[in-house]
Structure formats: structure tokens, C-alpha cells
Amino acid sequence: MRAAGVPFILPLLVGLAACQPEPRSASYFEAHPQERVEVVADCRIGTHRGEECKNAQFAAEKAARTKTMNDYRSGF
Image (tube, rainbow, N blue to C red; front, side, top):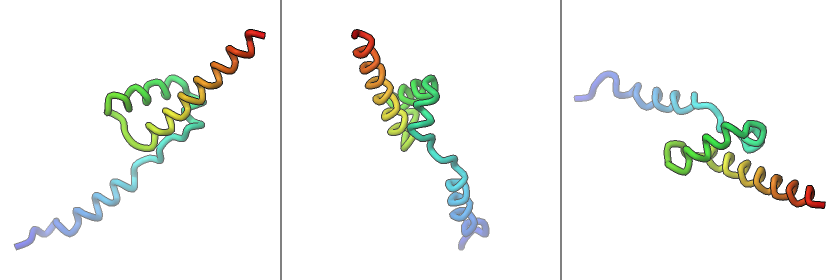
């Protein structure tokens, strides 16, 4: 015996998954350093996952390289 609502569960779950927002890009995290710091920290402890972790980490590494280069240049 099959429940009447079972055939509707799968399309509902697929529909909900499709409604999730696109991950924020690396350029977004470059422009929003506070959010970048928060997402990177959440990714490290495992409460945030996915493409946003990669994008935030990339932006953090780029910001660190830029800071190093600016510090180097200011020494001249």
C-alpha cells in the first residue's frame, strides 16, 4: 500500500533545492571583507560548506597577496 502524498515529495524536494541562492563569487568576497572573514571562519569549523567556501578562501588569499605586495612597495 502506498501513501497518496509520496509521489509529490520528490518534486517538492527538487523544487526546494532549485530555490537556493547562487553562491557568492570571489569578487563579492573581495568587495565585502567582513563577510569573507565570517565565511572563511565558518568553513574552517564546518558550519559552512560548498562553493562559497572556495570563493571566500580564494578572495582571502588574494587579499593577503595584495597586502603583502602593498607592504613591500611602501618600503621603497
